[in-house]
Image 1 (cartoon, helix red, strand yellow):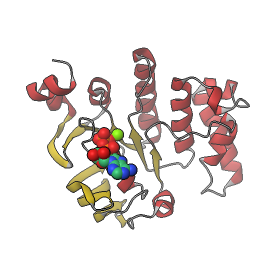
Image 2 (cartoon, protein in one colour):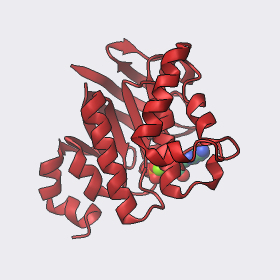
Image 3 (cartoon, helix red, strand yellow):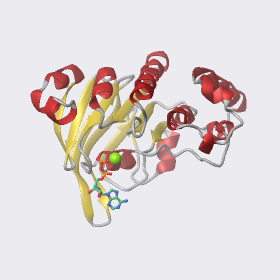
Image 4 (cartoon, helix red, strand yellow):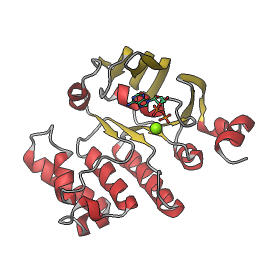
Length: 236
Ligand SMILES: Nc1ncnc2c1ncn2[C@@H]1O[C@H](COP(=O)(O)OP(=O)(O)O)[C@@H](O)[C@H]1O
Ligand SMILES: [Mg+2]
């Protein structure tokens, strides 16, 4: 079943259009990667999907249309977005950040269970629960950003460059954890990532975005074998 269905998506800033009609899908429980060079429009795509900016075109989640420019509606449809630069609140504690991720829920007992679940899943978050998020390392902050997004119990998780600024070993671990989350909870994921090695390793399919248009849409394994893609995104 199709989880996310995007048709003819146009979006931009003011009068300048950045996305010129994008079609993409994420099936239920699927991990999909989006590659593309700097400025291609990857972040804009995620912003348009999560209602942070306006758009034209049709976006549906679980068969329900999402209104444009309405972040609340996206959250209500259980679409979570881990933005570029992580978006955690540095002045709040780790625990408070997790609670903030549940702001749209009111099932208090289950929220407490979920906090415990994520503090256990990422043990460092449990250990640092009372510390301010700003004191965490980059990798720990990315874990917190993911755990906070998961507090929404999302159907679909949008991730914007989760590897940015992190050491290779930490990134590898992080991508394994994403794979585990997907495997155990069935959360669909759309991962925007310039580091194609790892995103293609965990994704079933991938899109390449070039200047606001999808130029390639292929199973991840085929994309890894594509010479042009190897040169552009996989370092030969
Ligand atoms: N807030 C903004 N206001 C105006 N233009 C923007 C804004 N954010 C991004 N852009 C422009 O939109 C284009 C796509 O940017 P972006 O979606 O961030 O690309 P990517 O994430 O693929 O690097 C770029 O030309 C960028 O300069
Ligand atoms: Mg970006």
